[in-house]
Length: 520
Image (tube, rainbow, N blue to C red; front, side, top):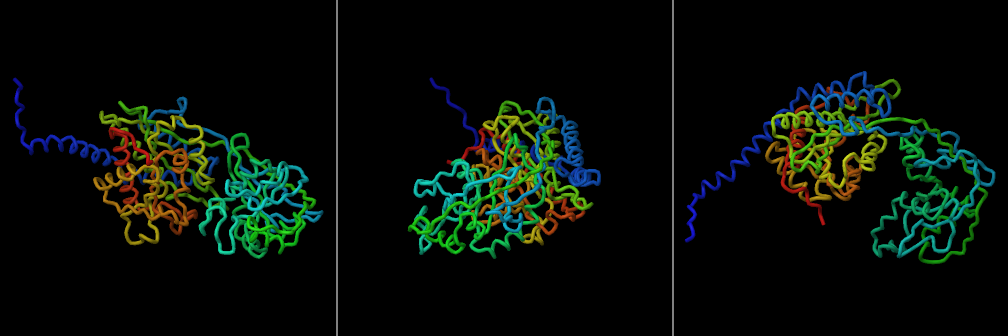
């Protein structure tokens, strides 16, 4: 005979269900409470101090900052995960231009007047090249500029844009919406290189007057020394940019005839004949080796320890310029002190026997200001398998107000939270409801946002590897990348509240039964 189960009152069932949830919520709140404004202030005071000299990548101040962060991780009991070290060291090169010029049929053209360069190339000796015209530089199933030309070992001249008819209809998309080829010069440069081209020359404007204005606007930025990966590690995409008249000289064609090609390419044949001028190129790059380092602290989880939640910020800034210290209190001192505070809070929880199920990697990157270099290096040479990495929560500038929130500090821009996992956005929103009540602003997730912030901080190098990310951000302000980005302007109550949001989100991600589901 079956034994009849006793009836359990519904209220008691509810109580049994909510008690574990309530206890967990109390634990999260307790350890989030270990994050406090006094610690945040003390950490930032060190990072912006005179002795750290603005934390310029590869400079002594950056090394001192790295040692300070590593010492903090050690004090919290975090493991040194890089073969017993807290530092993931790698080499960069500080590159500046030496002698750079073009000669077309014996006439020498001036750098940053008649042409300029993006990226890094190094043509140490004056070199002769043949020139070919490759239209828009596109090779696509629907349209190719490379069908009947041999570009191997030659200089290739191409237009930006793509072929459209008189009504503006693209040959590739069959609509007025242009394809990815139209505005991506690197895509075109890579294609030409794959075809064997020695160098790529791009015409990105429709007149010499436009080109002159562009050179004036870009000269200060492009003429400065650049830091990038050392030649043996990784080279940047590179191209020469020239005016329409210079491109026409290279192809021995009249400028107006050359420009008219842009309107007819792909739709009708032209009678214009082109041949290579005598082109000589020298573009000398002078490299100084630089060693730098990411700083990593590892907190091992329990039953799901092989899976990893990553919390990141970049600790480098602009360093010293003309004897001024660019202290970077907000950019990204506020992110670093958040990472340091979370490391402390989670370490206390673990010492109390409340450590996370998944492991957590606290990581501060170098080289962000030079093109997300530290995070790119980690993504290419990870210390822990990327396949086991659940997500990256990246904090970059959370201590100031932007123009849209000038009268209300209770906000944070949340960027990228649902691009790879809708579930990640839900976890973050639930954490915010339970702990913080911040206004989560998704403005910069819009696909047509001109700022493109999703691509501009270290989380993006994880996103490129299909790892879900969140970028926490306060927006830009008048002191962004200025020597006036100082500690006295930081709203520590705002940093504190956002840090508690990141902590709660990290806690939930590290302890939920299943790892995040990726969007289909």
